[in-house]
Image (cartoon, rainbow, N blue to C red; front, side, top):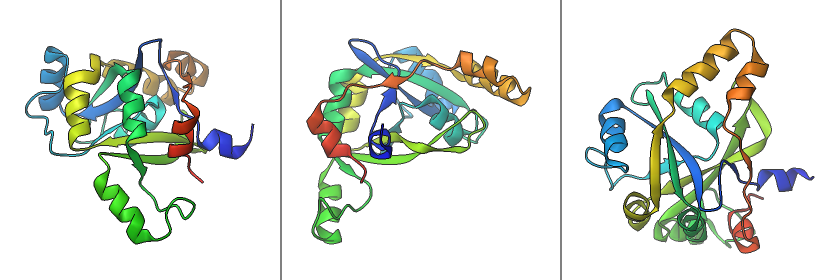
Amino acid sequence: MTGDALTNEVRARFDDETITVYQAYPARIAEPALKSGTFVDPFKRARMTWIKPSFLWMMYRCGWGAKVDQERVLAIDITREGFEWALSHSCLSHFDRARFATKEEWRTAVQSSPVRVQWDPERDLALNPLPHRAIQVGLSGPAVGLYVDEWIRGITDVTPLAHEVHAAVRSGDLNAAADLLPGERVYPLPGELVERIARR
């Protein structure tokens, strides 16, 4: 498989109806969300919210749930239909000359899109960067409303799992740590969505 193919693959835990994404929040946001089954006050719909299908990239971002205001790691099951809607209404967060003639044209597209897609190096168990990339999906405006009101099917607190994996890594038992990881595989995106989110 080529490097380009690896770059543009979305890897995630999913079934026939849902895909799991991750977010990390302080307890003041996580606890009401867990009780309500979706995000409620003090979650702010006016802010862009980034969802991440990669567990290890989430661990890198939140420091295994140790960073301030990211102490609670949540696994959110959302509909595949919603996830694919988000990608179909997205714009890449970086300028791509193959898509836009000028940076001004790209900036206009970003401002008019409710969703942004960003590709960052995937991480290994030591949180070192890997050659292939993990996707982040930033939701804003109407996309946040759809996420909160329609797409979410369940929220699970996976902070204990994050701590357990981290403990295995710190003890040097990488095999045990790997066995604990959520099973992620290549998500079967339609060809037009692969092209839309492709990182060149």
